Image 1 (cartoon, protein in one colour):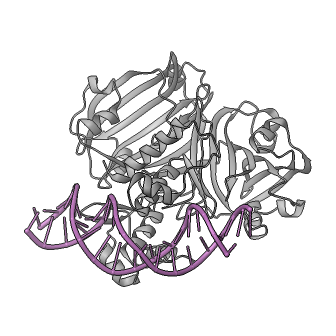
Image 2 (cartoon, chains in turn orange, red, cyan, blue):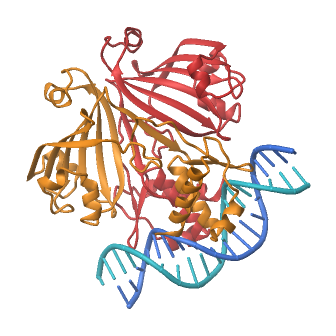
Image 3 (spheres, chains in turn brown, yellow, green, blue):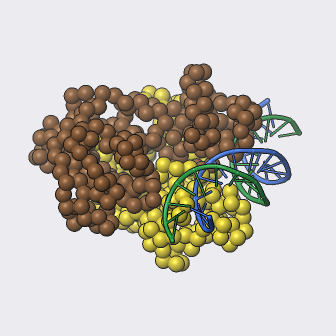
Length: 232
Length: 232
DNA sequence: TAGTGGTCTAGACCACGGG
DNA sequence: CCGTGGTCTAGACCACTAG
């Protein structure tokens, strides 16, 4: 593990141990340099990380402060959110799983791939369905998937099992009325509101390997997306 | 303007001039160091910026590549998105503007502020209403607003006129059926789907100054949100 | 005006990818 | 193995905040 990641972890631990609240001040950088015995640049790198995760913010000439957005009961739009308090009681039901030729529209997105896997699942928060997922995985990059794997967290398998690292993603949000079929799976009524999130996931070398369509149940879906227009 | 920002601009210009496409390779870092006559760290800082804006991605041991997501006709979730192609024909209609005591719920969010401004506006894309906005501004931080200002881009005024810099924001997304009043303003039917985005905007020193509720017209609202799980 | 974060440098060495 | 990006250092100097 890299030094700046270790430092970031220690800072998070520091916040937790000292029960720091929103707006509370952290030690100054020079102190951290001594404390953690690394260079200033490394501290800055760690702070950048925490900044991006919405955990801290810096004010020039003043100090570094704790930022803890209220994201209770929220689904983070990005999974890298610092305090991922959304590790609830999540279950998955597989509706469809098959190896297949990718539809044209998907082939266009997962460039150069013709074969792949189709996965349709419903995610439950407790016993409430909160999102319907339809995903296509490129076989070129994900050579093997099984019904068993698909019952669990797929991305964990991709990372642990295949050494496949997610690098970045494009997300397109759309609001629309859901179809009868979607309504059935989400235990709603046809025509009810739905948030459709179309995702394209890219692996380490920039090749797209997964293209998904998520339709969120509007009743159980509060989503959190923090921003930080900063760097370093 | 800082060096890394200038470098970032130059790289964007380079991409445009050479008509680089998704996946095309950029010059290597060492070349950029010579080309722009700055240190490697500064180049990295510029690249971090571009990375965060979804313009490039880096592959260790291989190179730096252009990333240009298809965001045609999309509203960026964050306004700092690199290629903001959404500078269309946008008009604003002010529905309500007044100086007022902030509601309790808003006071809780804009901590310590009791007085402020309330602004209700509809944003039109061409002649189609695409979002209904209800905003409260803390008078402590935004001491003056006028009906005239509110007819234009408020954040531009805050930046140029008041020297107020937006630092970061919390966003909460919710899908729901819109009310009769909202339907009237968005030229829709009551009960139609709507995306509600609750924003809290924080200024440079971490104090929240604006709390907004946006309800998007589901017919004209495709939203883009890129991610990049990286730093430096 | 002191203190704190922000920018920048020059250079050493590491880690990964691809030939 | 070479080339490329990634990490880290030590230190100089700038810019902003607050007392």
